[in-house]
Amino acid sequence: MFRVDDQQFQVLTEEALSTLPGIHAKNIANVAILFDYEPDGEQRLKLQLRDDQTLFGLYEGIPLPSRQGQSKLLPDKITLFKGPLEAASTSLSGLKENIRHTLWHEIGHYYGLDHQKIRELES
Image 1 (cartoon, rainbow, N blue to C red):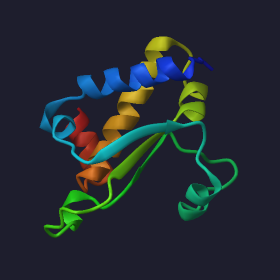
Image 2: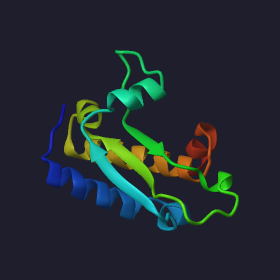
Image 3: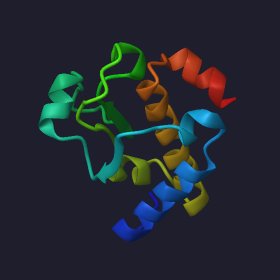
Image 4: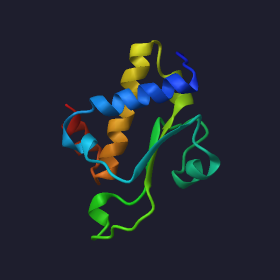
C-alpha cells in the first residue's frame, strides 16, 4: 500500500487528466471529477458489489450517446476511490498509473464506450 495525503491525491488526479491521450480526455464537459475514500453503501448496492469487492472509480451520469440532444443536464460525476487505489499501489509511480488508468476508464464510460473499446483506445 502506498499512501498520499488528500492534496497530493488531487494533484495526481489533475496531472493524470492532463496526460491522458487524444481528444477524448480533452473534450469532456460538464463533468465533476472528485475523489472519495471508498464507495458508499448506495453505490455498492447499485452495483451489487459483494463485501470482498471494491471499485477504483465510478462514472455516474448520462453517457453522451444517450443524451439525445439534451444539453441542460446536471453535471456528470467521476469519482476516484482513494482507498482502493492506494491499496493497489506500492509506489508513487504505481499510484500515478492506477489513477491515470482509472480516470481513462471512467472517461470512456462518459463517451458511452464499453470495456473492450476503452481497452482498445488506451493501447
